[in-house]
Image (cartoon, rainbow, N blue to C red; front, side, top):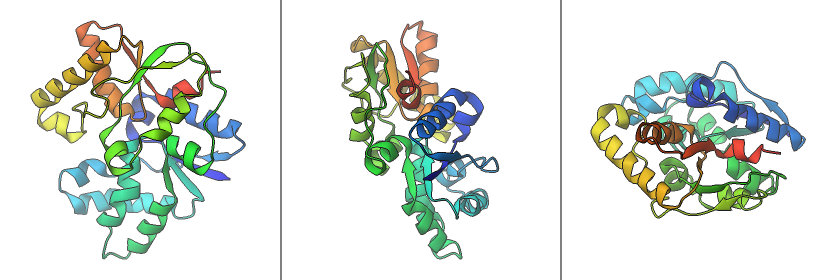
Length: 238
C-alpha cells in the first residue's frame, strides 16, 4: 500500500535517523512511502495549552494534506494521539468534522501499524544489547499501546528487554509542561532515569523522541552511560 508517513517536529528537527529508519523499514516491507513536506506540526502545543482556535489554524492544513492518504503512520505516540484521538474533538461541530473522523480512522502509530495492521513482528533486526522500555503517556494512555512495541522488540536478535518498575510513569517532559514547570519536570525525569538505571540496561527505548530527548538530557547531565534510542532505529538494525 501507499503509506503517508507523518514525521513529527522533534524527529524532523533533531532525530532524523528515526524517521529515516521508518522509511527504510516500510520500504523493505514492500510499501510505497510518501512524506508530505508541508506538514510542519500537528498543533498539539496550542491544543494542550487551551488555545484551540490557534490549534485549528495549524491542524486544518494537516487535514488537507492527509485527506487522500490510504494509511497514515506517525512515528510518535504523542502526535499519533493528537491526530487519531484529539482531531475529532478539536474539529467537532466544524466543517472539517467528518474529515477529521475519516483521517482518525486511517491513522496509526508506527509500532502498532506494523503489528496490528500489517501483522508483522519479526523484521530480522539484530541488536545485541540489554534494553529497557519507556511507555510514553499519550501512546500508552490515549492509544492503548503496550503490547505492540514489545512484540517487535521480542523478535530482535540478541536483544534482552528488562522492564523497569516505572515503565508507565511519565518522564516529565509533556511538551509545554516542561517549559511551564521545569523543576517538576526535572524531578519526574529523575525518577524515570533512576528506575531505568536500576535495570542495568544499556539503552532506554521508546516510540517517542520527545520523551527520549528529555531523558537523555538528564542522563547526560548525570554522567550516566545509559543511552536512548527510538524503537524504529532498533528495528532497522540489520
